[in-house]
Length: 321
Ligand SMILES: Nc1ncnc2c1ncn2[C@@H]1O[C@H](COP(=O)(O)OP(=O)(O)O)[C@@H](O)[C@H]1O
Ligand SMILES: NC(=O)OP(=O)(O)O
Image (cartoon, rainbow, N blue to C red):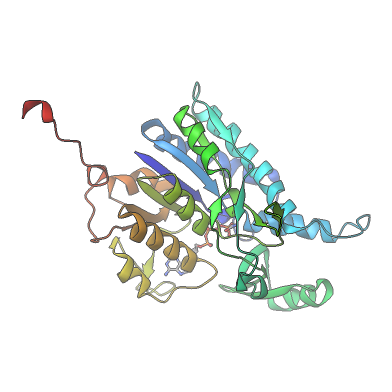
């Protein structure tokens, strides 16, 4: 089975954590243990978030007096791919001795006219209280919005159209490698008036890119791995309850926040609607349980799922007919 697994940026740098490399490397190592269990049985493409990390790099750049201008977000996105991609690469190599692992710096095509450039929604960087967020917004020209109980910087997040390196990722899969690509949703690029690739200032949602990548790589399953057990009804209330099986229509009927669970649900619905295959949202620690059908919110066209045999039923043995 071919699986695309998307790893949340917050799973690598948890809300309120200091952005130290040491903490994130430890989180990557525990993530790699789970991902290695998937890779032992399946073809695996790993993509990862970069929201917290890209915001930290942007702040470092903004605070560097030697620079005549801040590093642009496409370059910062590539920096996060290098950094997190390196951590994941090494952790996966150590977890899977003898297996080839490749980490690609990769670009995602967006449309130059996407209205999302003018309506920032993508949370980046650390969380702040309201007063600090407002001060930073006026000092640095940021837009800030409420993220749960806190405030964070937001930037434009155009819709991903295609990962430019899709064919290279496929070639690496065919060579038996675990492939890490399209981190942070991919470095955002447009095709300019000469047909050339050109970076743009944005941070693409990694869950939406994961869905595009899964579709274009003919994946059998898309797993969105995060820090909650799945999509919950009554989220944040004492009655909160995980939805264990869903159809795209039943999930779309739920009212979910744009900056967190909303894009995850949009990503899984899109993948299931376009491919008829299985997608799921759940905890990183439950990755195997999700494939087995015992954990997470599992989304299929009919809302039922009994385990991996439902994804790709065995080919009938025609030699006896
Ligand atoms: N209905 C819901 N069910 C579960 N989680 C929800 C829901 N609504 C909002 N959330 C929030 O979505 C978060 C996951 O999104 P996000 O923080 O963007 O994850 P990641 O960084 O892993 O991609 C959860 O930690 C939770 O706080
Ligand atoms: N780029 C992106 O969606 O990152 P997060 O998942 O960390 O928000």
